[in-house]
Picture 1: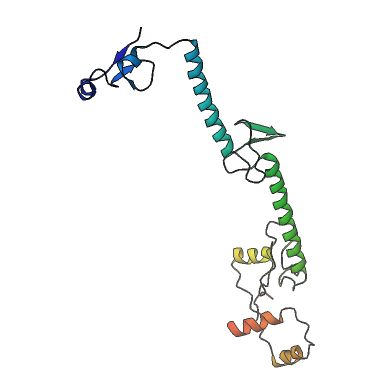
Picture 2: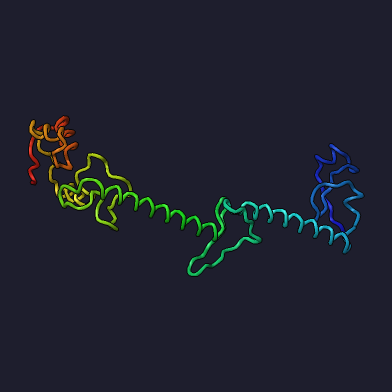
Length: 213
């Protein structure tokens, strides 16, 4: 038995024959004949169910499209998490599939390693650390090792510079270049890897000896 309802305001506005009736179990407002008819047979149910499934599939496909891999464009068939070894991987909007994620991770690691090797080679060709006489880039494999070519006026490796700051030792001031040093440098006979830094310090800082050496 159909159960319908309306309001006095709708009846006053549209009359009893207008689309003012709600039927329980159906969406929207209907005129009396539509509200009272009973097409609730199997075929009608199948049509409504098919419409609901179409809406669900459309929403599901829109969600899956949002999970497309930004690198290869792969679209997953379902929203889920996959386990790769000990890792649980969930696709995210704007993210990558597991394969592209692994490829990108390996590429970034390879690029970082190549950059580190280039920095090691560049720093090995520079002057040594003033304090420990090791590479100006730092101990190989350490957390403080430089990943780029050292500053042209750097005197200490990161480890020695860190120790100097923590112990409150004063900064290094190299000896003032003498006229004899300048003549030898001009003649190409001065063997001093810190010569250009001594010139820099002489221009910017007081002439004094490093108190630690």
